[in-house]
Amino acid sequence: MNFVTMLLHTKNVHLLKDVGMIPYMLWKQYGYDTRIITYKNEGNYEYLEKEVRGLKLKFIPRGRFGKIVDGSLYLWKNAGKIDILNVYHLNLASFIWLHVYKWRKKGGGRVYLKLDMDLKGMERAKKPGPVGYVKRRTIRLSDVVSVESTMIQKELASFLGKDILYLPNGFHLPKNNGQPFEKENILLTVGNLGTWAKATDVLLHGFALSYKNHGWKLKLIGPVEPKFFRTIDRFFKRWPECRERVEFTGEIKEKEELMEEYKKAKVFVLGSRGESFGIALAEAISCGCYLVTTDFVPAGYDLNGQGRFGEVVKTDDPRAMGEVFTKLWKEERDWNAKAEEIEKFAWEHFLWESAIEKLDKALHMCYDSKHKKKILRGWSG
Image 1 (cartoon, rainbow, N blue to C red):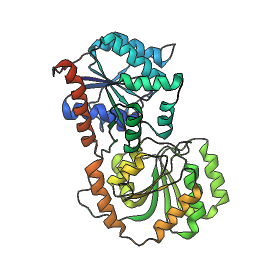
Image 2: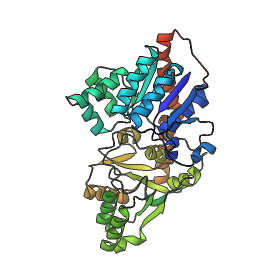
Image 3: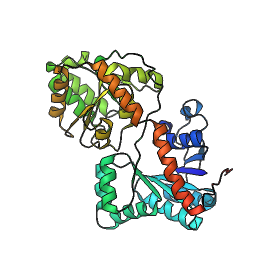
Image 4: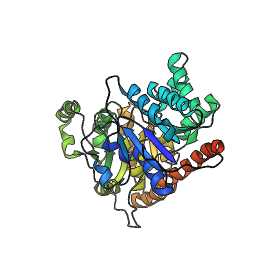
């Protein structure tokens, strides 16, 4: 079966997220002929050499009139060779690409829409007017629609009267192989530090407000937005005592090295102002980390086992975050034993392999119902 992901801004980092892992795992586990259609956004897609070796990228030229036209032209020429078109997000590009593909395929094609939807995105899909119409119409044009959290899945399915697939993102890390945890007093976060969505400023502020009440060390892993360096400087000038307990490591690309950081940390913190899932959360619980997330991370409730393995704080509230840090420090618990429990939960519920098995069944159901179980394979486009 020919499965094509259309995401023209794909970069190397996306290859280990849902954009890359879904086609990679469909190919590796189930023999789909998969590829990602994208511009050449980077000189080197290094994850193709090891982590997702065998994944195919098809680079298309960047035209004068933007991605909507470029993607439409590709689909106009190649729709007949595509059994399932995979697009992301409720935007004008997805809306137009689906119309072009469906029209050129003359009703024979199938669409998998991965919403990658946060709470604000769900509310925008409900709005009246042309913007809301485009979003709802895009969903109704799609044959399989998935979201990353049970909270949004239930509300969206009820609002639209349409089946919505709960398909959490997963992790793809080597297993701990029964080695005992030796957790340290580390609060860890991983991501693009300093972006508005990640709310790194709130995390720092919450730590500063509470550091006298606990003995945590805060470790921040990931690239730092250039403008955020000024915020960091101001933070250390205001709270110089935090210099010894706050560490910016920079980006860690090697998964094995990153896994070691997860394994050491007792708590993983994601203070986002908006997040559909947060793959770092899945990676963190796979290594036994207790979670602290915000109420604007809907998947946080699924990932923390509905409160068994984590705390949820109010978004943009550094004082509440600091209070949770203090609370966790003062609680008496066996962190290593809890880590083993969290790890088991993660491996049972958030492996990519499990998610892809669920997706494969949904894709076959919608495709085979139209084509009487005649599965088309092979493509040299």
